[in-house]
Every structure is written in C-alpha cells, then in structure tokens.
Length: 189
Image (cartoon, rainbow, N blue to C red; front, side, top):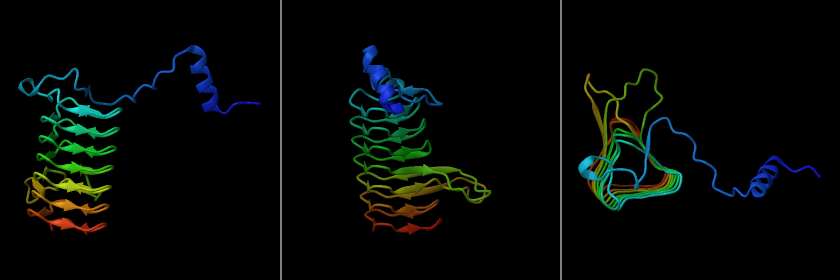
C-alpha cells in the first residue's frame, strides 16, 4: 500500500539513521542563543536566561538575568526584557518594547505589533511595568505618531490583563489596572 508523504519521509529518515529534529526555519535576522551571546557587559543576555526550543531571540535584544523565553517565541532586536520575566510559548515581542522585571506573558501574547490602518505611522515605544501579567492571546499595539512626534503605549506596574484583551495604540494604563477577558481599548485611551 502506498505511504502518505509524512510516512514516507519518516521511513526515509529512520532508514538513514538520522532521527534528528528538523532544522529550525531560517530567520531574516541573525539569531542568538544563551550559549553564544556575550553577557550584559558586551550586550546580549546572561547565561541565566533560558530560551525554549525553536524560540528566536534576535541579536540586539536585551534580556536580563533569569528571563525565560518559551518555545517558538520571537524576541526582536531592540526589545528589552527585565529580570525574572517569563515570555510564554508562541509570544511575539517587537523591537519597540520594554518589559519590566517579574512580568508574565502567557502563551500567544503579541506586544508591539503595528496596526493596519491606512497611513498609520508607527513611532514610539511600548512600556510594560514591573510585575504585570498578560494572559493568553493579549495584543498590545505599538504607538502611532502623535503631533509629529513619537507616541507611547503604556501598561503600568502590577497590572493584570486577562485573555483576548486588546490594548490599542497610544493607550496608557496606570498602576494596578485589571482588564477583563476580551476587553478592547481603542487607540488613545
């Protein structure tokens, strides 16, 4: 009986004795690992950082002591992540993002993505304060240009943002704010 494509590939690998993991997909930017990146004095991140399988941490991302990056997460060059923060699996942290210490980003969180509005000009930084938790599928958008200058999207310290919430461009949440599941904040709130 004919084998399906995946069975045929698996059988071929087994016969060749090369039962290794498939290679990670090529990334556009250079990728760093905890093994080959200099410590904080030379840029990069310290050896106490744990990077999950198939995660991508671009060279130029700054990760402090004790940061944990989950499997398949992507941290872009320019992002800064504070001490003891956990970035869950399948998260995306863009270059314009600064995350404080002791934060928890659960799975599939996207921070610093750009809106798809026509003519939207992205400019500024996303800042997340210390000890803030973003639950599954939270989306925090990058700021838009305001009066010809950069904008900010800010989530204060000790905040708790529940699953599927959207914090749109140029929003500012003060310390201790809690957002319920599925809450959507439009831009400039």
